[in-house]
Image 1 (cartoon, helix red, strand yellow):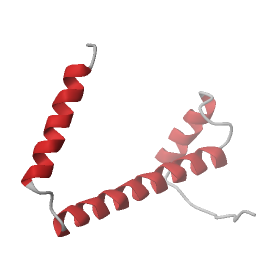
Image 2: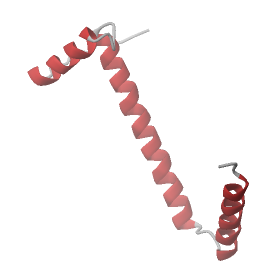
Image 3: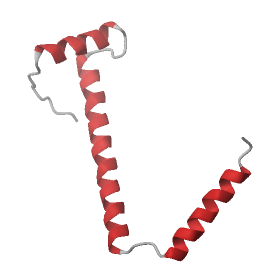
Image 4: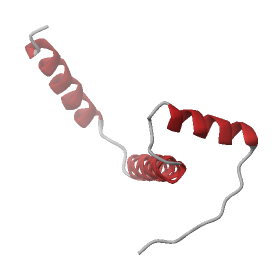
Length: 83
């Protein structure tokens, strides 16, 4: 199932969209718009997750012991990396 949505965009955006299609980045305007919408929705989803993580750590902050253990684990993993 799909929904058709009519949208007006400024000429400069329409020109950029046409250039993306001419360069072969997308097969059609609809494909480009769908990709852009997917990117926007993904960015919003990630922002929402980030806000929830911040809220969780604000509500229940890490203890000094947890921070020290995390730092120790990070340093150990860096030292083990075969740079």
